[in-house]
Image (tube, rainbow over all chains, first blue to last red; front, side, top):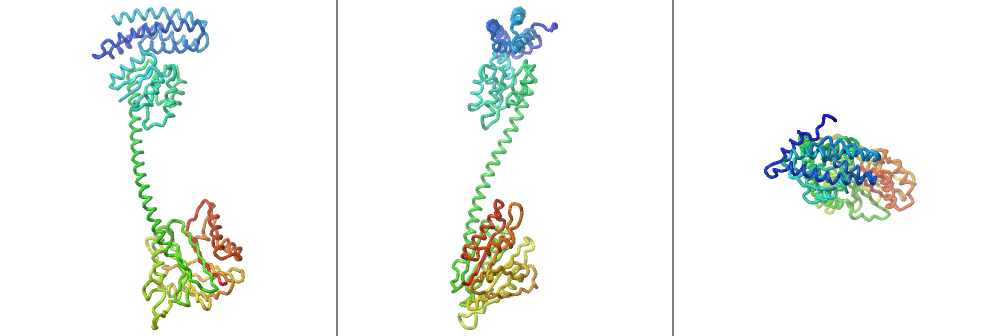
Length: 118
Length: 402
């Protein structure tokens, strides 16, 4: 995992190529939407962990794992996968520590995205 | 081609939408399973659907299950979107009816390859449906032809029925009964009883080999030949020197003439067997020939006898000389002439009814009226055949002296 970068340049490049004349800002809009929706979902996750709602933890972590993978953020995707597995195993006691790593990684991803879209 | 994309997660959905649009697909989006299901069951539904596994409400697998339960004309090729680690899920998804799967994050080339494979299957499906439609049309045509043929056969059967005895000659002390049951619409069997002059009755029962239309054609021809018609002279009698009198052909003469006229048909192998006889009304003597026909059964004093004198079937050998036999009927005697549809009727175990069973039935019923005895014998044959149904025509002609 250590060799992974916060954003995978190949994926970003492939997404950038999807932009066309009709939709020149596709990548920018997509990444900003990712940030907005992930931000909201992280709040949902914290609440679910506090109230020991494993079902919501598993579902939300799963969705964030998929979205992060798709925009090419493999490191945070891995963290969401670990959280999803904790939820499945009913081991939410370890989730708080993981959430703190996720929050740190999300800051890194956000700053990397900012570089990409500026 | 239209493709449905169903994913509740907007970022992934947008990437899919964009990628598919760039691949020249017409994309329809749904943000949840229920919306996807409504689109797929609606009119003009897309033939391809990419469904995310995890969606609130109806998930992708549930959409696929509903789709497979629904009986629609056109097939929807479904691809489930899953995370890479979920092999068990993939199996469950395919078992639920999904056609293929795609792991997230997806590779553009893999997506295209899977969609193209889907399109190939849809084309095959469409070809298959087109062929099914053609078959259905052809089938309707066949049904029309079949109905028309059935109609013709029924009309022909009604004509054939008119050639059976329509009014039995009334002779003192003589009871004549008959029974006739074709196994198809048309029969190869036929029979008749009619007066040749004031003192003589002609009786015959014949069985053309095979059954159905080809047998019926010859059987009808023979009915015509073995009738008096409007002509003064025919195979059965010639006009005498004194007006109003006739020289009646003997049964052997009739058999010889038929034998010369109806040589076995080489191509079809068609031939016939016949018993032709003349009953002298005054002396009650019955003189007859049998050409390859099952032996008649005569009951005298309640005991069955059969006459072992049958010759070759008609048309087998031109030189064959048919021999006559004469029996005198006494009060209480019953004579039964029948076709092999009775003794050769087979049950589902391929066992024949046999002449023995037939004779036993007639013996058991000697005390009941003759017509009932015939019906009961045929009922027993039909019960014997059971589900096997009759495989040959049945005909019976019986005389009784009271």
